[in-house]
Image 1: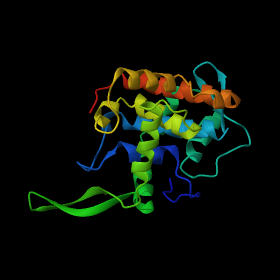
Image 2: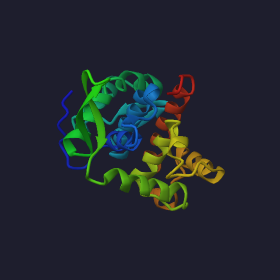
Image 3: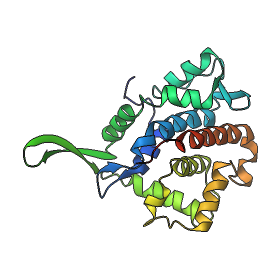
Image 4: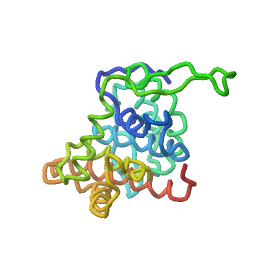
Length: 226
Protein backbone atom coordinates (compact mmCIF):
# COMPACT_ATOMS: atom_id res chain seq x y z
CA UNK A 1 0.00 0.00 0.00
CA UNK A 2 1.50 3.35 -0.99
CA UNK A 3 1.80 6.12 1.55
CA UNK A 4 1.73 8.91 -1.03
CA UNK A 5 -1.50 10.91 -0.96
CA UNK A 6 -3.27 11.63 -4.24
CA UNK A 7 -5.07 14.59 -2.78
CA UNK A 8 -4.17 17.60 -0.68
CA UNK A 9 -7.25 16.86 1.43
CA UNK A 10 -6.37 14.51 4.33
CA UNK A 11 -8.50 11.41 4.75
CA UNK A 12 -10.66 10.88 7.82
CA UNK A 13 -8.19 8.22 8.96
CA UNK A 14 -5.38 10.79 8.92
CA UNK A 15 -7.41 13.35 10.84
CA UNK A 16 -8.53 10.71 13.35
CA UNK A 17 -4.99 9.46 13.99
CA UNK A 18 -3.79 13.06 14.33
CA UNK A 19 -6.44 13.70 16.99
CA UNK A 20 -5.61 10.45 18.79
CA UNK A 21 -1.94 11.47 18.90
CA UNK A 22 -1.14 12.84 22.35
CA UNK A 23 1.51 15.57 22.08
CA UNK A 24 2.42 15.55 25.78
CA UNK A 25 3.42 11.88 25.79
CA UNK A 26 4.19 11.32 22.12
CA UNK A 27 1.84 8.34 22.13
CA UNK A 28 -1.39 7.46 20.33
CA UNK A 29 -4.49 6.99 22.43
CA UNK A 30 -6.39 3.73 22.06
CA UNK A 31 -3.60 1.69 20.47
CA UNK A 32 -5.27 -1.61 21.42
CA UNK A 33 -8.35 -0.81 19.33
CA UNK A 34 -6.74 1.49 16.78
CA UNK A 35 -7.18 -0.78 13.80
CA UNK A 36 -10.94 -0.88 14.26
CA UNK A 37 -11.37 2.89 14.39
CA UNK A 38 -8.94 3.51 11.51
CA UNK A 39 -10.83 0.90 9.48
CA UNK A 40 -14.04 2.66 10.46
CA UNK A 41 -12.59 5.97 9.29
CA UNK A 42 -11.74 4.49 5.89
CA UNK A 43 -15.25 3.04 5.49
CA UNK A 44 -16.78 6.34 6.63
CA UNK A 45 -14.66 8.19 4.09
CA UNK A 46 -15.89 5.84 1.37
CA UNK A 47 -19.45 6.48 2.52
CA UNK A 48 -18.96 10.26 2.50
CA UNK A 49 -17.60 10.04 -1.03
CA UNK A 50 -20.58 7.89 -2.10
CA UNK A 51 -18.26 4.98 -2.90
CA UNK A 52 -20.13 2.66 -0.54
CA UNK A 53 -23.66 1.33 -0.26
CA UNK A 54 -25.57 -0.87 2.21
CA UNK A 55 -27.34 -3.71 0.35
CA UNK A 56 -28.54 -5.19 3.65
CA UNK A 57 -28.59 -4.27 7.31
CA UNK A 58 -25.09 -4.32 8.75
CA UNK A 59 -23.48 -5.08 5.39
CA UNK A 60 -21.59 -2.82 3.00
CA UNK A 61 -20.50 -3.05 -0.62
CA UNK A 62 -18.60 -0.82 -3.01
CA UNK A 63 -20.55 1.23 -5.53
CA UNK A 64 -19.72 -0.38 -8.87
CA UNK A 65 -17.68 1.77 -11.20
CA UNK A 66 -17.07 4.49 -8.60
CA UNK A 67 -13.69 3.83 -6.95
CA UNK A 68 -11.97 6.47 -4.80
CA UNK A 69 -8.93 8.22 -6.24
CA UNK A 70 -7.00 8.07 -2.98
CA UNK A 71 -4.63 5.11 -2.69
CA UNK A 72 -5.28 4.79 1.03
CA UNK A 73 -8.97 4.13 0.42
CA UNK A 74 -8.71 2.02 -2.72
CA UNK A 75 -7.76 -1.35 -1.10
CA UNK A 76 -10.91 -1.24 1.06
CA UNK A 77 -13.04 -0.37 -1.97
CA UNK A 78 -11.48 -3.26 -3.93
CA UNK A 79 -12.13 -5.65 -1.03
CA UNK A 80 -15.76 -4.62 -0.77
CA UNK A 81 -16.23 -4.74 -4.54
CA UNK A 82 -15.88 -8.53 -4.45
CA UNK A 83 -19.13 -9.05 -2.54
CA UNK A 84 -21.14 -7.52 0.33
CA UNK A 85 -19.40 -7.89 3.67
CA UNK A 86 -20.44 -7.49 7.26
CA UNK A 87 -19.05 -4.25 8.63
CA UNK A 88 -17.17 -5.93 11.47
CA UNK A 89 -15.66 -8.39 8.97
CA UNK A 90 -14.57 -5.46 6.81
CA UNK A 91 -13.08 -3.61 9.77
CA UNK A 92 -11.04 -6.64 10.80
CA UNK A 93 -9.83 -7.15 7.22
CA UNK A 94 -8.79 -3.61 6.32
CA UNK A 95 -7.91 -2.09 9.68
CA UNK A 96 -4.69 -3.86 10.73
CA UNK A 97 -2.65 -2.57 7.77
CA UNK A 98 -3.58 1.10 8.22
CA UNK A 99 -1.54 2.44 11.13
CA UNK A 100 1.82 2.71 9.36
CA UNK A 101 0.68 4.27 6.06
CA UNK A 102 -1.59 6.71 7.88
CA UNK A 103 1.18 7.72 10.29
CA UNK A 104 3.62 8.02 7.36
CA UNK A 105 1.24 10.46 5.69
CA UNK A 106 1.02 12.59 8.81
CA UNK A 107 4.80 12.69 8.99
CA UNK A 108 5.06 13.56 5.29
CA UNK A 109 2.53 16.37 5.75
CA UNK A 110 4.45 17.73 8.74
CA UNK A 111 1.55 17.14 11.12
CA UNK A 112 3.72 14.84 13.24
CA UNK A 113 7.53 14.88 13.47
CA UNK A 114 9.83 11.93 14.07
CA UNK A 115 12.86 12.76 16.19
CA UNK A 116 15.87 10.60 17.13
CA UNK A 117 15.69 9.44 20.72
CA UNK A 118 17.75 7.27 23.06
CA UNK A 119 16.22 4.88 25.56
CA UNK A 120 18.21 4.63 28.81
CA UNK A 121 20.88 6.64 27.03
CA UNK A 122 21.86 3.60 24.98
CA UNK A 123 19.30 2.38 22.47
CA UNK A 124 18.49 4.55 19.47
CA UNK A 125 14.84 4.89 18.53
CA UNK A 126 12.50 7.60 17.29
CA UNK A 127 10.04 9.70 19.26
CA UNK A 128 6.90 11.29 17.88
CA UNK A 129 6.32 15.01 18.35
CA UNK A 130 3.58 17.33 17.15
CA UNK A 131 4.43 19.17 13.94
CA UNK A 132 4.09 22.89 13.43
CA UNK A 133 1.07 23.00 11.13
CA UNK A 134 -1.52 23.66 13.84
CA UNK A 135 -3.97 21.28 12.17
CA UNK A 136 -4.49 19.11 15.26
CA UNK A 137 -5.52 22.14 17.32
CA UNK A 138 -7.96 23.26 14.62
CA UNK A 139 -9.53 19.81 14.35
CA UNK A 140 -9.83 19.54 18.13
CA UNK A 141 -11.49 22.96 18.26
CA UNK A 142 -14.03 21.89 15.62
CA UNK A 143 -14.82 18.67 17.50
CA UNK A 144 -15.10 20.58 20.77
CA UNK A 145 -17.45 23.06 19.11
CA UNK A 146 -19.74 20.19 18.10
CA UNK A 147 -19.58 18.26 21.37
CA UNK A 148 -19.34 20.98 23.99
CA UNK A 149 -21.07 23.95 22.36
CA UNK A 150 -23.69 21.84 20.58
CA UNK A 151 -22.92 23.45 17.21
CA UNK A 152 -24.16 21.77 14.04
CA UNK A 153 -20.97 20.35 12.58
CA UNK A 154 -19.93 19.98 8.99
CA UNK A 155 -20.37 16.43 7.73
CA UNK A 156 -16.71 15.43 8.03
CA UNK A 157 -16.43 16.87 11.55
CA UNK A 158 -19.59 15.02 12.57
CA UNK A 159 -18.13 11.74 11.29
CA UNK A 160 -14.79 12.49 12.94
CA UNK A 161 -16.41 13.25 16.29
CA UNK A 162 -18.50 10.08 16.03
CA UNK A 163 -15.41 7.99 15.28
CA UNK A 164 -13.49 9.60 18.13
CA UNK A 165 -16.36 8.76 20.44
CA UNK A 166 -16.46 5.22 19.07
CA UNK A 167 -12.76 4.80 19.89
CA UNK A 168 -13.55 5.04 23.59
CA UNK A 169 -10.79 7.61 24.10
CA UNK A 170 -12.85 10.76 24.68
CA UNK A 171 -12.21 10.71 28.46
CA UNK A 172 -8.51 11.20 27.67
CA UNK A 173 -9.36 14.56 26.06
CA UNK A 174 -10.88 15.91 29.28
CA UNK A 175 -8.52 18.92 29.38
CA UNK A 176 -9.87 20.14 26.02
CA UNK A 177 -13.28 18.42 25.88
CA UNK A 178 -14.81 18.10 29.36
CA UNK A 179 -16.13 14.59 29.97
CA UNK A 180 -19.63 15.60 31.08
CA UNK A 181 -23.09 14.12 30.68
CA UNK A 182 -24.09 16.63 27.92
CA UNK A 183 -20.90 15.82 25.98
CA UNK A 184 -21.53 12.09 26.31
CA UNK A 185 -25.11 12.51 25.11
CA UNK A 186 -24.06 14.67 22.17
CA UNK A 187 -21.38 12.15 21.18
CA UNK A 188 -23.98 9.37 21.21
CA UNK A 189 -26.24 11.49 18.96
CA UNK A 190 -23.42 11.86 16.44
CA UNK A 191 -22.71 8.12 16.62
CA UNK A 192 -26.34 7.49 15.67
CA UNK A 193 -26.06 9.84 12.69
CA UNK A 194 -27.98 12.73 14.22
CA UNK A 195 -25.92 15.44 12.54
CA UNK A 196 -28.54 18.16 12.21
CA UNK A 197 -30.91 19.53 9.62
CA UNK A 198 -28.26 20.14 6.97
CA UNK A 199 -27.54 16.42 6.87
CA UNK A 200 -31.06 15.60 5.64
CA UNK A 201 -29.89 15.53 2.03
CA UNK A 202 -27.15 13.07 3.01
CA UNK A 203 -29.41 10.47 4.57
CA UNK A 204 -27.78 7.48 2.87
CA UNK A 205 -24.27 8.65 3.71
CA UNK A 206 -25.31 9.34 7.29
CA UNK A 207 -26.88 5.90 7.62
CA UNK A 208 -23.82 4.13 6.23
CA UNK A 209 -21.50 6.10 8.50
CA UNK A 210 -23.65 5.42 11.57
CA UNK A 211 -23.65 1.71 10.69
CA UNK A 212 -19.86 1.74 10.40
CA UNK A 213 -19.38 3.64 13.66
CA UNK A 214 -21.72 1.44 15.67
CA UNK A 215 -20.21 -1.75 14.26
CA UNK A 216 -16.81 -0.44 15.32
CA UNK A 217 -18.17 0.24 18.81
CA UNK A 218 -19.58 -3.28 19.02
CA UNK A 219 -16.22 -4.74 18.05
CA UNK A 220 -14.19 -2.47 20.34
CA UNK A 221 -16.26 -3.10 23.46
CA UNK A 222 -15.12 -6.74 23.60
CA UNK A 223 -11.43 -5.79 23.40
CA UNK A 224 -9.19 -4.54 26.22
CA UNK A 225 -8.60 -0.78 26.24
CA UNK A 226 -5.14 0.73 26.27
